[in-house]
Length: 105
Image 1 (cartoon, rainbow, N blue to C red):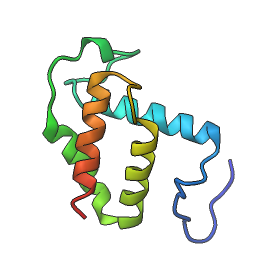
Image 2 (cartoon, rainbow, N blue to C red):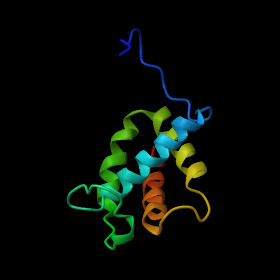
Image 3 (cartoon, rainbow, N blue to C red):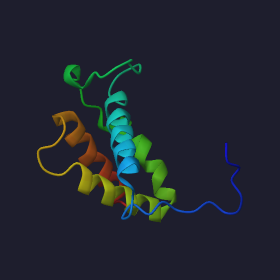
Image 4 (cartoon, helix red, strand yellow):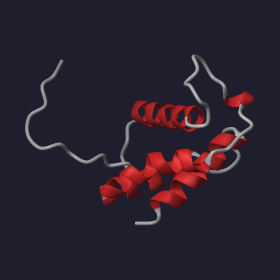
């Protein structure tokens, strides 16, 4: 395991490698879907989600507002990754809630 030295570098969401983009996409999908259930599930449960808890997503993304550059980077990533008809309705809805929350900067 590589030891980190020096100051942490910000993530540049405009030049992510394909593997990093895919990892972050899956991370956000999981974050969105797991925030809508009382307990995280093993495997995917996107198809069974019927309730939508806006406050659960807002609570997660309000913490990002402390770091303005990160908030703007996540907005950029989400808007490029989840545009159009890709993803489930819950993920698209959650993505919009997250971006609205992050735009309150």
